[in-house]
Length: 358
Image 1 (cartoon, rainbow, N blue to C red):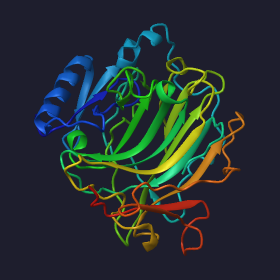
Image 2 (tube, helix red, strand yellow):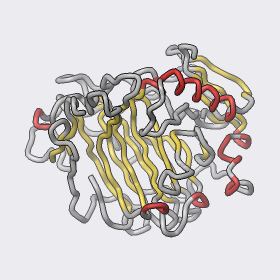
Image 3 (cartoon, rainbow, N blue to C red):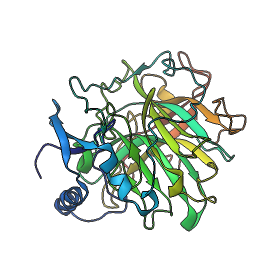
Image 4 (cartoon, helix red, strand yellow):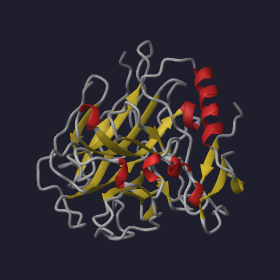
């Protein structure tokens, strides 16, 4: 596999990166790379034009009407929605933390032509959520990943449906750099589920922000903090689940992908935080900054600014219910509220750790 990663950049208004790997994979890295190449060959669409970034990523601009999403049988007669019918109320251009800096999308000189695009748990009914995630770049082996994200979900077992968005460092996927990513499923990961646009479903509309875009600069231990703002919300008119990154409308998951018992009528769960994966024979990688949350701001990873839409009225507000904290391997990773510490926010959580668990 060549050193340059290939991106699907659908021509109209966003890109799609290459990520397809379930966390239970055990095959050798070479086989995974061959599988990825085969997958890309099967899903690639003819490009209207292409670009190569300074990092070696190849971005293909694809006709928005010919993107992979519309190969899905449930989307055969789908009409593209270029923007939400209703936009939630939140402060535009003021969603970043006071002490953290938002990460700009550094794609100078790259834009697809018009008509193309560049490819803490809440147990209440919700119709949207937003959060700021501090960005780090933990070291991982070729078979590991480390990530931070926001998850919205509904249903149970085979009817479990979820959408996740945030940043991930996954060497098989992105050569050890922190990149924007999404992952969704409509049946508990049985037959559906993939990263970004590696399967049919997500409709990209942004020609500026592709899924899989490099996020830089990243946070520095005891130095400058960088963050990415994530918003996922349900358009109350169409029912589609929209993804905003900072204030950019990236795209959406059509409501027809989901059922009433899942995400079709809202989400029953919202969670924020970190996640890692490692084969059983390897010590687990670090999460966030690689330091425990007790070290505090600038030294550990954080999530803050979390708000939800709980009344189907498109108004984001602080949760009116208790936020639960959970760490399933406290020896290696922990979580704690940020309240009471200097230079932090009322609505914040610190999390992470050095890893090393087997």
